[in-house]
Length: 122
Image 1 (spheres, helix red, strand yellow):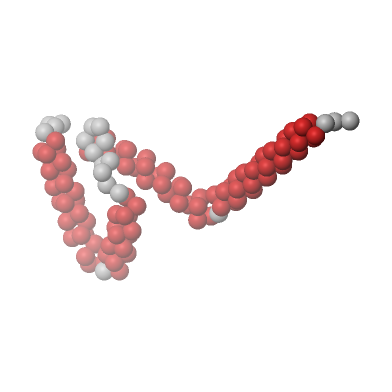
Image 2 (image 1 turned 30 degrees about the horizontal axis):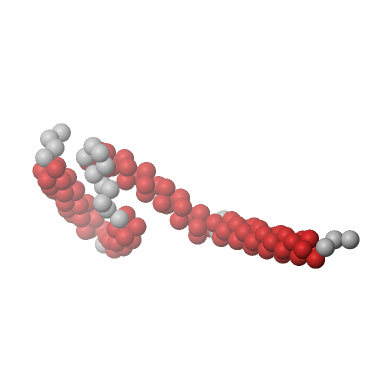
């Protein structure tokens, strides 16, 4: 027969294993819920938009200024404003061309200011 010390040690080991099993089950349950939430259409669309914006930001940033000229712009904030302005302009057809011309002038001015501020001549 086992002594009281051995039985106590076994009880402690059993309790530790039960706690580890509970922690493992909770971890797998949490991972399952994360996967289910990540596969929601909204989450997939958000991830795809984030990837596209990141790629576009890197490409345009290298085009405007080598070394990433658009790294300080938060596109998640700017994009809804641009979409709102675009839908407003699409309803007023006669303002579309002047607005595009104004946008091109503003973009050229911003590029000129960025290059002038950084001292890079390309």
